[in-house]
Length: 253
Length: 291
Image (cartoon, rainbow over all chains, first blue to last red; front, side, top):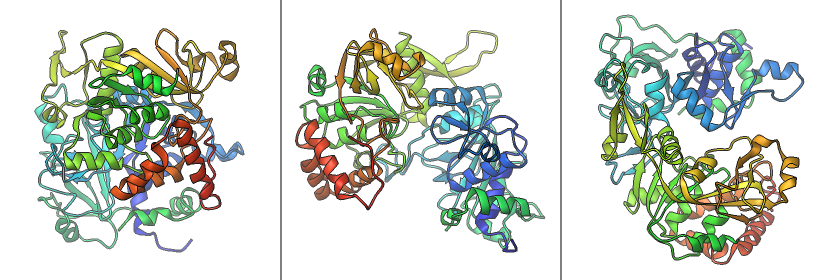
């Protein structure tokens, strides 16, 4: 295993890091690289995480499944009605996609253009409004570009820090945007006004690359570290167990 | 009763709730019966999938109330996408949890239920009739007052039922089918097989009996009645057919041919045509268990 980590593998680990320290909560990744990240986290530094099969089964960590000689082990039942209760109860951290994302983390997955007659109908708001006022939320953007990172989103689906502040401290007390992982970098909201900040750049990417690909002014610290590389153990898990077919590379441009 | 009998009991302008989720366990035989009817101006409440798309394509829908309309493995329902972009269908766009809460309020005969979801988002902007409510207790918290989604009729599809309307799901998720029935004035249940009441306890544990006869107005036996959506364990989603459907929906000429091939006749003719499609795909795609 001497092959250098690929960009996709760096992204998998950056996504995994989003769930570090979350304990026993439901991790809900949207997209392949976030899904690999969540499973990697569960297999390594975040064994408490709960993961579903995309239907109503909670699956035990892959290691447990193999020890039992089975393809998979169901450790629980989570139909959609129970997912909604976990959401409202705050026992979840989701990593969603975003067609548009603004400086304070307002997210749009609903439609592009005027809502009354959109230029492009997208997914609809789905669970984004409820997710963002109830439990931690992160985002995965596989193509970091000014088309995604915009000044103003067309339909606020998941709410950002400015909208949350407008609700007052009581209604906004469960709002938390953790990180935004992209094809170029990791971003967060750890600034005094909760505007988006460049947290780390993936190896081979410069801060200027990220600034150029972002459609609003980004907070950039004097020193921007590199996103951490996968460990040898993490690479072995990603390549040998979680995604032996290498589908992860297809999710990046 | 038959699927066409169910369509015959509906009226234009009604609010109709449809069970299942996305492209999973949808009452497609009942939907196909509506496609053969003259019903118009329906308001459809659904965790939407091809049920919503087909009814829009057939010109039966005035308004959709939903959080999404998706085919699961194909993210966006193509007929819904086009109708939205052409402005030919009205939409009440809600958070998925708000839809659940609206059905629960209706089932409990409450005017509304408070929910946090929606606060701060553009959901209230595009639904200006939505109101908030302030907690009368010391916390004083302000929440969305999700209005009851009262339905004139509900349509659901389950694996088994008896003739009286006791219905059983054998897959992993009940979705919200019981709430759809309870929120509705009349509820129609189609199923893969009608069995004697005594057989229900052999096919699954008591908690698999999702709806009881007090919640159901009429029962239709419709083998393959969820096709091309999933109805596990009886059959999975027919992905090849769904891809065929989505491709046809993308082009007006192809859609006319799809309609003529699959939707012009009755349910038996649909099922035969779907089998012909599967046979023509043999060796190309995964075999499906659709009857």
